[in-house]
Each structure stands twice: as C-alpha cells, then as structure tokens.
View 1 (cartoon, rainbow, N blue to C red):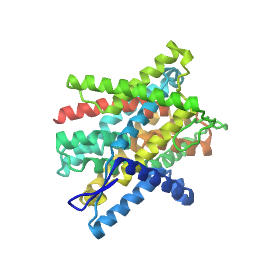
View 2 (view 1 turned 180 degrees about the horizontal axis):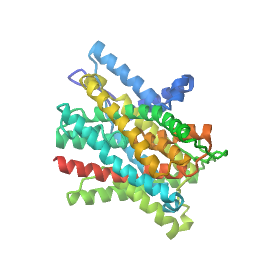
View 3 (view 1 turned 135 degrees about the vertical axis):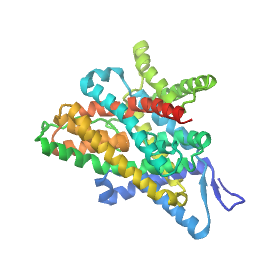
View 4 (view 1 turned 60 degrees about the horizontal axis):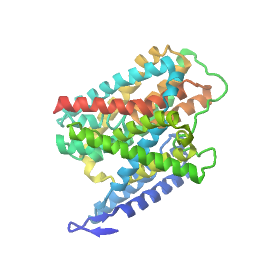
Length: 407
C-alpha cells in the first residue's frame, strides 16, 4: 500500500489514501469540537485536519527529505459523487420561489465571474506570471472552490504551462474559504446598521447542508436508491463527456455528470413516479456530506506546501484584491440591485461566502446573520440555487472562454 520510490518518496496507494483521508476528517472534526475559534470562523472540518497534516508532511520533508505522495484517483471519484448529488437535488420547481432576487443574483454573479478573472489575470500578468495562472486565483479556485480548482488544474498545467497549478489552486481555494467566513457576517452587519434593516422574528428552515445531521432515519432501500441514481447519472455523464471530447469540446467530468443528474432528477419523477427518485432525501444528503468531506481532506493533506514558498507574497496580494473586489461589488452593485432590503443584506453575506469560498460557507454566513437579526426566507432559497447549481455551470463556460482568448 506504500511504495518507496527511487527518489526517496513514499508513494501511497489509493486504498490507504482514502483511509488516511477519513482519518484526517475525523481529526478535523475532533479539533473543531474542541477549539472554539475554528467553529466561530466556520472553518470546515476537512480543512482543519487536511491543513494540519499537510503542514506535518511539509515538516517531514524539510527535516528528513521524505516526500509523501498520495495517489488520488479515488479522491476524483468522490468529487464526481459530490457534484452528482448537487444535480440530483436541483429541482426546476424551486426557481419559481426565488423570482426576481434569484434572477438578479444570478445575473450579478455571472458579471462578477468576469471581474474576478480579470483581477486574477491582471495581477498575474503584472507580477510576471502566465496570464492563465490568474484564473487559478480567479473564479476557478475562489468562486469555483476546491473541486473546480482540482478539475481545471491539469488543463492549466498541461496546456498552458502553469507550474504547480494544483497546489496553487487548492491553496487559493482554502484561503478563500477563510476570507469568506470572516468577511460575510461583518458585511451584513454593516449594511443592516447603516440602513436600519430588520428581519422577521421566526427563523427559516435552512434544510440539510454540509455539517448538519440528517433529520430522519436512512433506511437500506433509500440509501441503495441514492447510490443507484448517482451511478446512473455518472454513466450518462461519462458518455456525454466522451461524446463532447470526440468533437473537440473538453469539459471537466464533474460538469457533464452534474448536467446528467439535473436532467434525470427533473424528468424521472414525472415520467415514472413509482420509482421513488431520491432527490432531497437524507440518504443523498449523507452521501454528499461524506463525499465532500473526504474529498477535501484528501486534497488538503496531499498539498506539497514547501513548493509554494515562492508564491506566498503574490498569493497574498491577489487574495487581498479579490476580497476587496467582492466586498465592493456586494455593497455597490448587488445590494442596491436587490433594493437595499434586509433580504438583500443577508443575500450579500451569502454572495461573499460562495464568491470567495463555497456554498456551505455562504449558508454559515447567512445563518449567523439571521440568528441575530431575524429570518430571511428568500435568501435561503436563492443563494443555494445560484451558489451550488447555476454558477458551477456558468463558471465552466466562462473559464473556457477565457482560456480560448488566452490560448
């Protein structure tokens, strides 16, 4: 399970790599339970454990010259699993509930994708790096998150010659999570106090999301149906990906699998209601949480931090500029477009959460705001739809357009 290579590296095979990822996730959970600042700043459990182990492996390399290299093929399967679960939970009927705020948030976020990439490319070019490297500290890693960074890293590395694309992308996504969790709440507080806003007293039903325990029992049949739906969606997504590749269109596998899941979850229940399609079930939520948690833990624990020392300064600079861009965009553009309401302030905190971090960060930001200032039912409808559904698809298209211009 561990192979000693000729250069002195320890090569960890997939089975043990997954086992290590699960262990790292447990350690992250244990640390978050005992260290209040980690919970207060909404640091995800796999990030806590993964970064701790990546630092440990870096110290091992610096002290003894031993490089630990993980074979991550199983991790990539977990990535596809997670995006399929998002697609299986995406109901077109939810679009009617969002209405105007949903359309505004989607349009504004699409425009922000372009701005985020322009900032990244501009800083990269100004510092003497390849322009394509700017996308790694743009929408690929920040708005797209760890999964998108890992999916696009091979393309940037192999086709555009970006060095250490995977490590830079994952590090930028991790830093974005921290910035998003620190900035979203204070932004909403600023908007609420400045405009004298107030929410209703009752709290919204947030629903099952990352880090939350399922509310009902998961039975054998329900879990098996969820697994079957994931695999059927995966098969169709793989076939669609191969078909696109045959005509010269290259897309990350998780995008086509996500699309296949969306199509199935909106067609099968209507065509064959007796099949008990697993959309919105606790079993599907559990699979999503486990897939994302182990995936992130494996991604972060395998980072080779010693190779990034030379990039520390430029990365800090671009992240500060991206944070400023996100906050200014939320205050000057998104909040006024949403009519400066209390819902607009909560949605703005969620926007900062997923534009710099991830949808779970956005949910955590909005929950913290509503627990103190009152409920915002609209925010908890539109932000997950945009952050975990639409924007991943749009981001894939925008990134491809930028790469086409830069090639």
